Structures are given as C-alpha cells and as structure tokens.
Length: 189
Image (cartoon, rainbow, N blue to C red; front, side):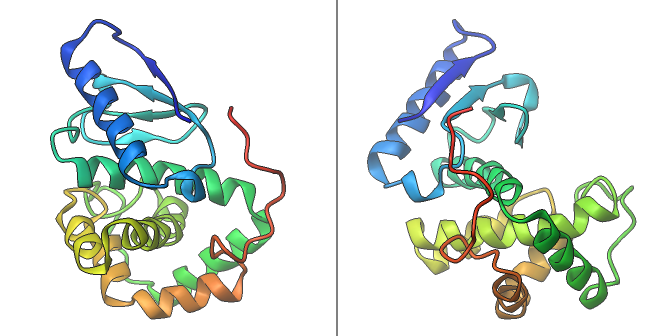
C-alpha cells in the first residue's frame, strides 16, 4: 500500500495526481517494484521527481498515466540501487563510463545527469525503469514512453539502442531486480 503525502493538500491537481497513483496501484501489481512506500506529491517538481530522502513526484504528468508510472518507477529504481551492493553499482557505472564514453556535457541538462557520475548511474536506473515498465505495459509501450521523455534523452537513446548490452552489465554485477542481493530489506521510509 502506498503512503501518499502532499505538499499542497487542497490543490485539485495534487488530489487528481494522488487518484491517478492510486488507480495505477489498483491496475498493476506494483509490489515487486516498490522499494519505498512513502510517496510525496509536490507540484513544485513539475515533470520529474526526486528519489531521496522521500520519494517525491511532480504532478505534471498525472494526466498521462503511463508517463506518470514511468517517473514513479524511475524514482523507485533509485531506491532499489541504494539497497544493492554499492561496490557492484560502482563497478557497473565504471563499465557504462568505458562503454559509452561519448556522453554530452552535463550542461546539456535534458540529455544527461547533473554530472558524469549521475549520467552513468542513470544507465542503470533508466534500464531498470524500462525493464519495469516492460513488465507492466509491455515492451513496445514501455519503449514508446521512455523514448518520449523530454529528459535524459541521450541516456534513454543509449538504453533503447543498447538494451541487451546494458542488461549484460547489469547481470554481470547482480543488479537485475530478481537477482540482486539487497543489503537491507525493503522498508517503508
């Protein structure tokens, strides 16, 4: 069960976004993709979200439930990776950095992460997002949703083009959701 908090409790759009999130939780079995149950809806975040310390979602995409689900899963995958062996995450990031060394400059904010580490961390996050979305929406729709995001465009193009190559890196480091040995059990905080 999701524990939904609001930064603006009486805002009609926030209430709508909360209902969309609840509808998604009713429509899909989200439990395999939940690594925190505490969700904050914050209209100040616009189109995106923030994973920590509380998973917070902007409400801009609530009228597009598939995209809203994608952003939600994206932030959940940050939580998942934080629960994994961090040396395995770092090893995967080093492989991504070596295999895709032509990343745009971080100043191209819609293309990559805020810095080099964030860019290559998002290879793992965005691949996990695609994998999770594929489970829930089917592979074709998941790829459509990921390719339509106005953010992380270069990263997503790599994830969509090199899906199997990235999957191999993830598997080699035990970072597939079904294979990961989590450092601590899923928790609600």
